Length: 587
Image (cartoon, rainbow, N blue to C red; front, side):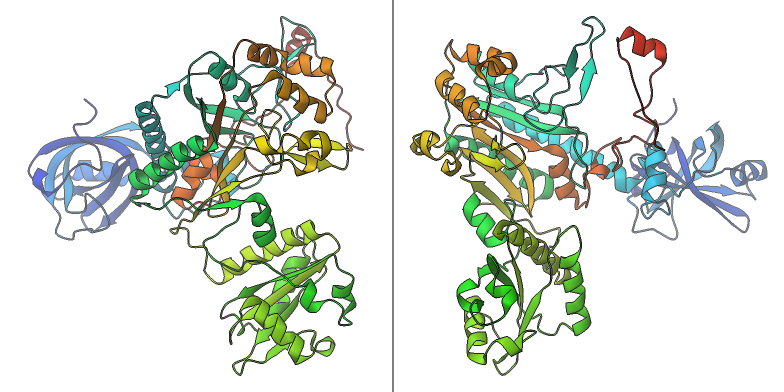
């Protein structure tokens, strides 16, 4: 056999046992007549000892081992004289009597250690080496544990795991589809699913009652730290439920994951916030509530006093950073440059310090009396030592988003966004529609199968923009980890929804006729939720990007640099698929 134990298994109780281990050479070091080799596998590291005085030939062979050589050793477990408290096997070592090199290895392009010297690009290119690092592998072990707990929790609640198709019809109303040409149907294409939405609703029509799936989903959209072109959802649907039933079930699952994965017991219900209040107080529909700094609108206090920037603005608002009045001019200038970056787009920033004596010192003092500045202080409930930061703009929503970025930056600078602190929140009562200026029509804020609040249904005919959705998002630390809604289960209401979204009857029938027809055969009231597994894992692991909890991720350009995908097809393949590719070279 290749091994009797793993490299993370042996303890002081195993002393004097003769064992066989296999793994990769982490490092080796020669000290006098002794050679020490750290042998690594998925489970840990065990120190090997080769003694020149006992077996010179064996010690000479050990001195020729390179990093990442795959070896097998046999030897006796010995108690270490210099124990290593940082290793689970740090009390023992193996006095090697036999060595077999199973495979040599080229020198890796970066060190296979937790603190690697490899940058992102090189580690992505050699991802199979990067996965040998404990820091990366532990994220995938965490992901595995989470999926096991999800399956166990939902199984106990009567959910059935059902696989839905990967090759489906295109639904261009959402994000961009990835499309797949059909060889047997020339000129026609499948799409890869952005979610199993339609199929899980059909499963409810089928009477499955409770469905879930850990599903691969695909969206051809611009990438960022929490997005990949392919990602994994914990996709769920339930019949005969209202919003409260879904929220209760999946808040319970979230608490279960916190307890079993992170050892955190949450006994209180998650707070809830309407979408309107989230946008008003935080400028975001996924606010980070680990800290305060809620927005305060200041038009009544600061407009009409002769400062034209504020007097002409559609919105003037600010945040109060407790204890930050000690910020230097250089730090304040840095914040101003931060909000003026193209990604944020503010034209400038005004600040006001609350001095130790209670007076307020502002960057626009010449326009405002101390009396007005005291009103400003009172609006925030600011205390001596606090710093008030103010933005204004011609577009209230845009300015709130800019202020949101400033708030998050201040949270980072003041150490208020601890990755080991978790603040959970439900955001509810989203608008059903959002107006798209480019197309001049309403778009579904979530998707066209989301049910409106029953009390708002009459507004569909009079003021669709005021209709609230039966939708809900779970937010943790400013990250949307899941979202869902109660679905439309009535054919007439679904038809009305398509009309408001600008669908002709023919187009609605062409794209979604199978769903609308299914509803005619008795669809139960139903709703559900989908969690982003990648985002959950990255939160629990304290990662800044979801890439490090995915085994083989894409880079920011959507490329797999390891396999060099996407790539070009042979002409014979294109011909077989009836595809003509016309690529115009850039001049």
